[in-house]
Length: 107
Image (cartoon, rainbow, N blue to C red; front, side, top):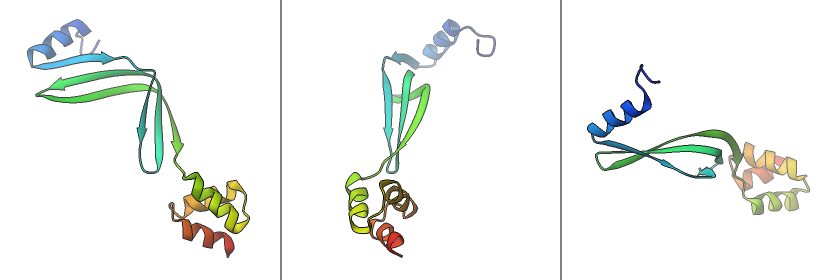
């Protein structure tokens, strides 16, 4: 209970203030950014609607994946003879700058 109030009382109070909530069923949520992807498995999602605006509260098991352009990794490997691991590391260190990554492995 939040602040000694049971969830039904809380929902009733929020509704009186013009705030509605609803649960959203989902298997997973994926948030894609420029550099990484955040994957939320087994999410509990609540949509909160207030003054015509929706916001979402999401909780669950979180894992992150870095986003790399596989064509860039392959090109770095081809041009430098580096292993995939070294090519990925160079690309990360160069903040995705392909030319800088290649030069760093050739030096």
